[in-house]
Amino acid sequence: MSAREIREPRPGVEARFDEAHYGVFDHGAHVFAWRPPGARPVIWMSRQSLFAPGRAIRGGVPVCFPWFGGGPKGASTPPHGFARLVDWRRVGVNDEIDAQQRLTVDYALDATTAGAQPDFPHRFAAALRAVFARDHLQIDLEVKNEGATEFAFEAALHTYLAVGDARRIVIEGLDGAPFIDKAADAPARERVQQGPLALTGETDRIYESNAAVTVIDPVWERRLLVTQGGSAQTVIWNPWETRARAMADFGDEEWTGMVCVEAVNALDHAVRVAPGASHRMWQRIALA
Image 1 (cartoon, helix red, strand yellow):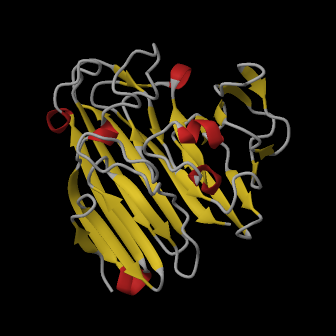
Image 2 (cartoon, rainbow, N blue to C red):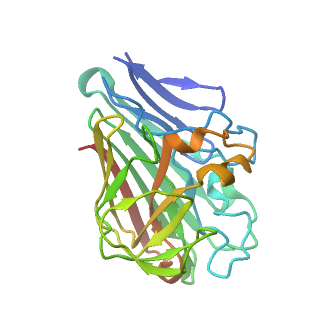
Image 3 (cartoon, rainbow, N blue to C red):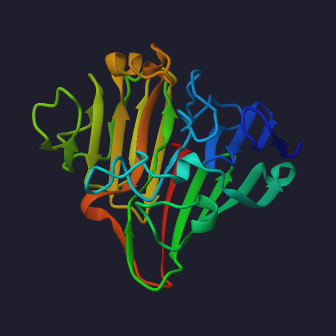
């Protein structure tokens, strides 16, 4: 059973076999499915996601580049950068499903493909590789400076993980890490994690940590191990009930089935790249 090219709801590459499901859209080089053989889905997608040209896809693994949120000054548009809103060039597909249950898809994006971007007028070349395997999903993002002057960028792999019930999961690996709390009802903006993290309300935290994180899911009786490299921060996000209801592309009750665990370089950790140099960040998700 081999991978196939798909056209709906967006063009991309997909594979289904032995109850497994791998998938990535060309729009945003956006991974939308990883379900290992014999397991529940690991990557979450909203049933209300919009698939229109120029719109972000809700769920999966959006690529935030060249800024995170509104950028260091908070005024860059569109939010989370342009990379998730444009079609990347699919430059390679290595189908090893029959032999190894493995699929690798490569994408490229540059200044010409992305079009004029007033908030990022730099010559760059970005490459994304998505590797789907029976025991892990790995996504690599590499950005090269093809201009004559240094530039800085922010980036995130904005991964949505599927869980049995977000109210019952426990996240380990962040104990002692300072974090910025961006939730509307946060008691303080700057805090330090004490012990494992349990979600009890809207969660929007930028942790100063790139340590391995384990999502313990008692409802689905599994553990997800998330590791990363080339990144300085980890974001944990869940909109909770009120904010979920305010989003048109997010089902009112879907928030219980997901949590974002993101590899990030943002704010003071924006990456500076010299002419001719490049920077690689990656994230790997595995069943622990």
